[in-house]
Image: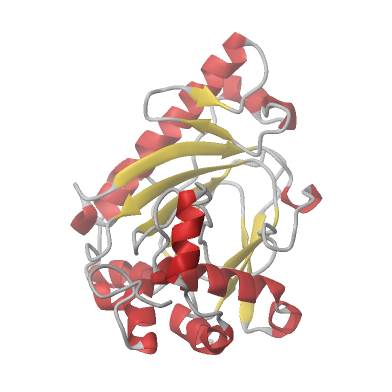
Length: 297
């Protein structure tokens, strides 16, 4: 397997720069890995790196663009400090993306920033929800119509514990393997899901196929055990960036991470033909979103 990890030796968030080959790599589904670009946790913030900063029944702590912190427990002082720490990471992540991928400047929509204090390997989840199984990101309730998921991650673990991923083959190889098993898209089903508010908008054929790939990958025990993949330990003090709707990955272990998601509209990539939407459209042989799409019965 051609390496899906591209190592970049940045040491300062404010001095990042771009290269065309890095943009091409991330748009090909590779993971950009910065082993020395760690987020600096201040001494007074070290006490926030504990699992009980997370409110009961919450999966993550998140900070919205409005500055509102959700999913956090602890005192008002703790929550204020946590919001400041997460907000500082958001500023640095946005600066990194602007400098590293300047072609996207002015195009990106910023999602809430998350702090994830839970230990990955102790979470009890269904097969479909289990991120320890190889997958590409796709969400049942939120049709994307090809909108991209660009994500910036950093490992904050104060005990030297890496966040361990498995990273698999390129998207087109995975699509060619699993598409023949995909159930056909039915417009009436998409309309029904939308009518009962199971989806936030009408699910496109593209979104249907992405969900099929997500589920087929996760439920295929042979693929999970023997599929072509590499194990990548991201140590504390490192950062990694990828399009998580394209990079095949699984999150195996680790605790204490922050993550920033950015949404890129479809077609705004430097090479739109490398996107999952373009790849699936070529493989299926018809439009999967927009005019002429979604007509299957």
